[in-house]
Image (cartoon, rainbow, N blue to C red):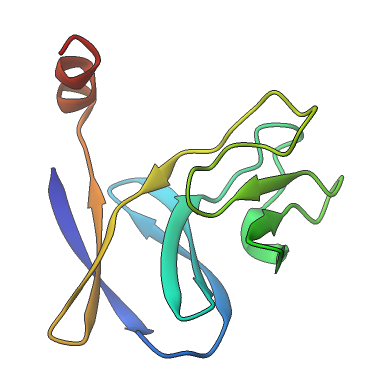
Length: 112
């Protein structure tokens, strides 16, 4: 897994949603209840930009059709039968880092 430092993001208690591009992926960073989450920025339902959405009850809500995704797991709400990818986040020396696994790393993990 490769870790990417995210400039301009600080670990504060202030809520935020911001889209960043890391390793050719659009990632939605969410500051919610003192934690930072990294999720896919594109809604699988209609392709909406999740960084234009909002958080409610621990879920990221898509602004297009109000589909929602768990911040911890990426799992869609009941009845949606979908999910978004999540990415690990680490705080190192006050800086925020997001981990991205390569295709081959994901493939190896699938066969363990």
